[in-house]
Image 1 (cartoon, rainbow, N blue to C red):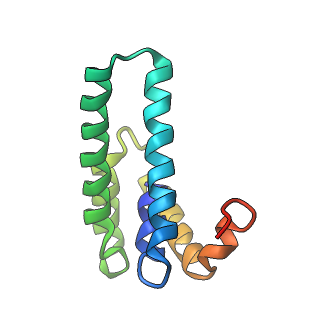
Image 2: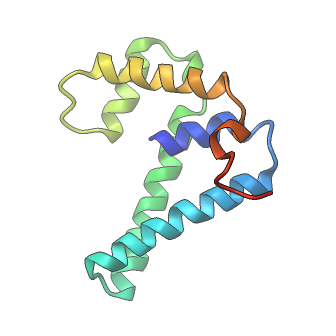
Image 3: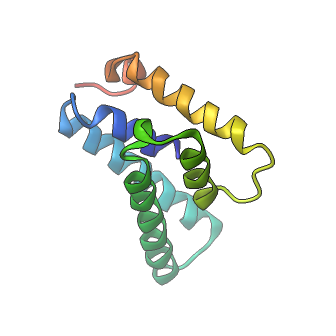
Length: 116
């Protein structure tokens, strides 16, 4: 979820090469984690396809996040997060996270991590 919000906020105003590098790194790390668990190549490919579908579904659902009511946001989060005991907390949490992202630059988050 966090990465979906991150890309949503920074896709508009930033160098697409940097965002592509971040995206590639995230999914490369995910693939490596799946390999460490011991899955074979065919299982890894299937899992990666499932994860990518889930990720793009998240991006699609949160694309207009700021336009949704609090109840609509809760409904969206319930699609991706099961057994939420406090969905109001999560709704506020992700709204605060989105606002924090919008109040900073991409460089604020990657400074010292990526070399341009």
